[in-house]
Length: 499
Image 1 (tube, rainbow, N blue to C red):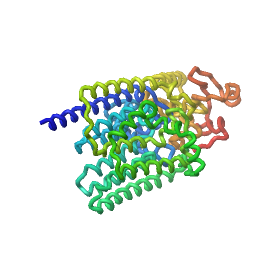
Image 2: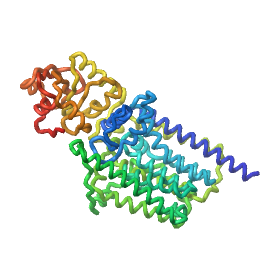
Image 3: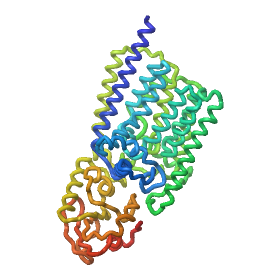
């Protein structure tokens, strides 16, 4: 009877903790996801709106041949239900960031290790605010991790060997989408017993091969239009010197990813009292160290700042999830803690980490260091778009040229998220939607609105009739006669690359 009561109590505690963690994630989406965006996330907005309207260009990030638009694709049903894109994408990204934690907690719970499941959730709650801020950006950072996590869950839960092909497909597909999911492969030692009979290895590999072939087939289609690619795949330059540089700045490199400071005490507690010490655990930890060293050697991993929108956490985002798996696979589940006291502590942790997240969810904190991504409050962006639309209507402008202006894709892609009939807005260089130049480049607008930070009014008057307008940054109405959009842009920016 007492054993049955204890089991019921821990199950109730698990459900309570799960509800608290979900509430925390909903809070985070409301505080950050629904409040802020940036010039990369609005590209995801554009892709989602395009696909919702049946306009499929490719499944890669616009202007790239790497990373995918999976988050945009998953947001399409919400757009069909008339959910605004600036809410739909944060909802999808929030759910994807929630998925690994819930799946790994379920692995423990469904195998009767309720306290391990509780600690999976509590450990996730203690992740630094910067981790969740990064994971919830609609930028492709979390989608690969979510796919790999689902593949791991299938491996652990399924009784059907054929499902291992789906698991292999998800794991390989997730890593191809974003290699930052690679740390989850460290969980292989924890799951070796699931590959019996050994034929399951072959089945899983068949799924991984299928995912790889599909990825390269899609990439082959994308590179047929290299004129649309403005961000080629980064060069994979690796060196031991770079490893040394990363370890010299180790605290800064992992500060957005792993719980540090007070939360480190919690990690130590988990290791000493919850996590069993066996060969599988040590093998997993060794794999984590090896992969961390390997990733640290790539030159690309030095391309970050303390800016959340351009932070180091995006490279090693899956690292803490492997620690969750170690806890989930723990066989030690005999910690006796009064349930009421535990629930009170969990609520206190919820309040503490929620306040910490809210305190850090502002432009001043998230953009405390320069990053080449423009971030903005969604409400402010909406106002800017309304003002530009008003100016365009008053001056009969149907085309906007985005010159060297700091708002970038928040205008060219983001404004359509608020205003369906917003004028077409294009950049001369780094325009991720190069096909629009092919569509609109030969049109004769008569008038254009130029958003430009460096060209002066006197310079512009050498070629055009100019009217300055009050918008954020410099704005000019140019009367351009019978010049086409492409000719106008080539006159303004003769040194730029054009599609």
